[in-house]
Image 1 (tube, one colour):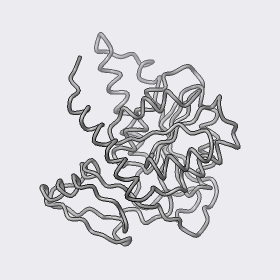
Image 2 (cartoon, helix red, strand yellow):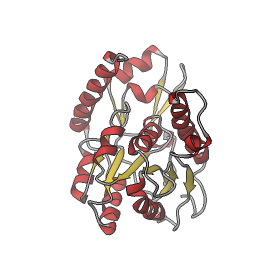
Image 3 (tube, helix red, strand yellow):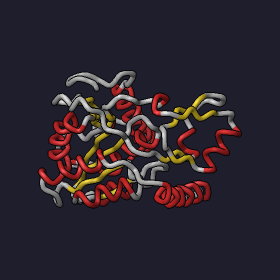
Image 4 (cartoon, one colour):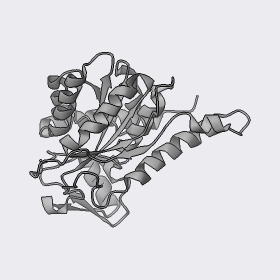
Length: 273
């Protein structure tokens, strides 16, 4: 367990935040008509900061539950390498086929987990409407055995929620963090935007039952909250439930795989318009 004010071993959260910001800022620069973005265009938007836990986490480590490994999980694994597999994880047929094709071997057993640390990594982002609640959440994460990677926004000036939803969803889908949390006025827009990123499964939850269901039944990895729809104490309980609930069994995994299949089909069929 990482102590308060420290970072999980082997985790460069500043690099994660920097890459997320660079992606968004680079894409914004390319959209500038004259090809020369102003300094204001560069400075306005995604802001990154790293927040360490503010309180020492309990000494007992919680299990992370059964995980779903699909073909997209192998994207960052080199050909011929080993893939650490959590004991009891669900591996889809497509993932096993991809592993065979690329000579990737699964190494099973809890000792092979790449993150046996108790501290989870959580990317968090908000627009101006969710900024105040985001600051509160960053202060809570240490109590949930988590370290936060703040991907913006930096203040309450008007901004666009899809920018931050995209940055957080990309960090989750790439495996740079374990979970994502997004906050805007209602939480709906951020969920829609985040779910456009392949590999992200965002759920807008406003009570504990929904948060638990999203994790157990839907294997959600991004939680979205509506700052105008939920009280601070309720948001605390929802986040606690979301981060502590493991994913469900094989029957749920098969259904989630069907969601992934739909995602893969339409991502493949998508054409520039």
